[in-house]
Image 1: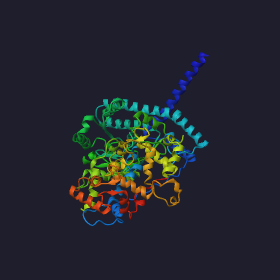
Image 2: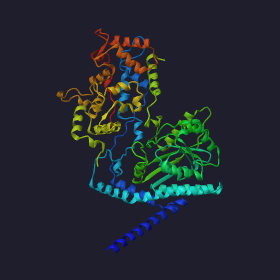
Image 3: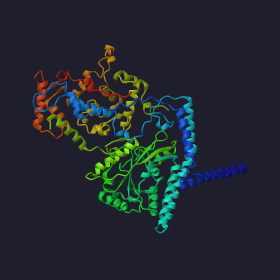
Image 4: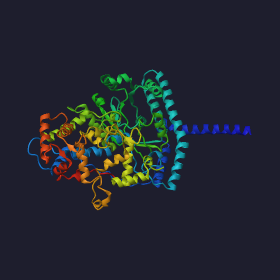
Length: 430
Length: 195
């Protein structure tokens, strides 16, 4: 009996080893050559059909478009029926109605806080995590959901973890090895191939299906690539189609290890925490990097924080003051297959990655926009807004002026002061 | 399965809120989701800080007064019932409500109650009168630093003069109603709630 048990363990180990090798061969080799065996495409097709078949289409009330009337128009409307004052300033007791209404509207729903939590779906996609407002449950849906849980957690998750681990460890080992080579064209080409291969393996580890549009606008060397930010995965998404010099803060732990090895094979821009405070030093380092035409374009996320991919929030002007060509990129994830947004207040990085790996898939569109440069007489803030609008327009995202920093910080007093000033001019008429 | 947030809200509670405020079932569950998302401390009640976290409300010149309207006298927390009761003032007035049961009392979103909400915004010490001082303070909130004390004072004086009919140099609720009798309160103090 013991022999049989021992024998079956050995057999299980062999089979597991064989299975892993086959999987790795089928994914790693194509990844090196940028080929796709079409597994992911087929999976996505099957998934879409299944979701449609089991879909619960809840009728969601159409968002009532808010009237875009200004403070002035609203208050003039209010005062229309009120007896006119004879002397002094132009104030009426009903003026407060305008502020009340605006205030209560923002309590019921506001444009900002909703951007820091995951988007609500129009119909359920069979993941428990998105089941917030859907009540109807039927037997067939429950069965499919159960099947989905089994497939995602028992089959896909282990596979994806292996792939991701493979991709990351190859990245660390490979870049360290490449770093030993003397600087040369060959070294650069090997480094690029290595980076892309590893990112492609990581993308397989997320079952990512990425569609790149307008590849002719791909960011060039010596340029600055800016994109809207939804999650750390944005880097994997973009790096699957090109090599970028990453910009970011130095981390400790595993991230730090990856950062240190990456920079051995090709230049990235990592900042110490203390350096980030000095805006001029930051700008200088970026400028120096971009001036070197042999270096890869730098990748920057000007929002400074992760947003939930329904809108683009204020772009920090720092990257737009460097004075080089900006290559805007718009990234839009399809929430039906998995929610890519990293809510850092709710989930740690590890918890987030596990969520990603137990979603159906990551499906997204990437649009490369034509390069933009600062125009004469245009200041950095306006330039940043112009680029932001272009990205929002292409990605079908709401263009907001609010600062992504409001996720954690308070809003500036100056906005309230601006409102007060506007209202005052209505009272005294200048 | 089923809605995660509203699983903390019992059907009996929803029915009671429905009766008291007139909101529909789906409106109540939707607003409960919103309440829950604002409740960062997850203790089933909102504090003033929870409201202040909404940027559009924080920059509203009357933001503090509006937030205050949710909190009963002397309290620092508002539960979901209180939240809904206050929001109910802003429910649009529907025609078919006019023929309701006369014993159910005045609905929270009647013209009178909407005006009462606005009146209480001015009445800082809750003594049912708007004094010159209170009016000045609210005006100061709305205009910031952009108007001088003298000018603001004369605006306050003139406003009280126009409204005050019994000569006590302050505005009572009935005087308030009289001054605003021609204003379309039902429309201006209502917001659209999604179904």
